[in-house]
Image 1 (cartoon, one colour):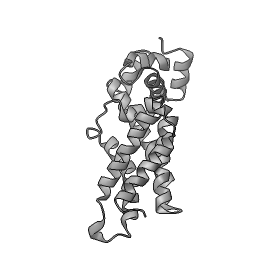
Image 2: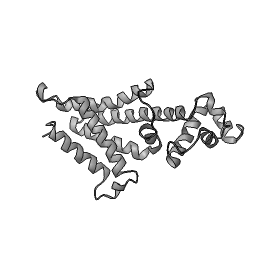
Image 3: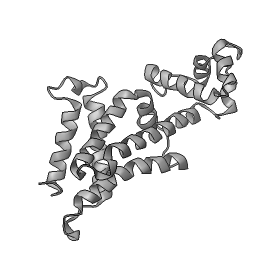
Length: 208
């Protein structure tokens, strides 16, 4: 498709080809999965020539990395807002981050898939690693605050708790939401995550 299409002119007029490609990629990821389209298809969806994306990205994988990076930035912002420095209580704030996790997966499936199901290398991209650490840091901070009332020798490693809760949240997304087989269970994804987290925290002695 010629770069002088209406959508192409609009992208260039606003100097926003990069954003147009990200939006096109989100749409394609939701429709076909992260491996189900080419860079040329993303260009066509954005209304530009097949050569245009190379002004910003070396290939499809780098474009998906950009989508994942933006997704993790939004995700970290949502977790931080939900936790709200442990207010009104650390436990309620910690549970709120779980709901924020599920809400993000439901409301932004294209970003979520790019982040967790596209095979992007977190460790191979310093920006991705940094923003992922920011998101994980919310859960780790919550774990530290929950354990603060325990004697030091009884406090579980905050990083371990954060990783376990992250894994539990991701599992609930994959099995109990987004049309997964477990979505027909007699309880909601939110109920599943909240009860699972409570059982886990109770087993560690972090809540009564």
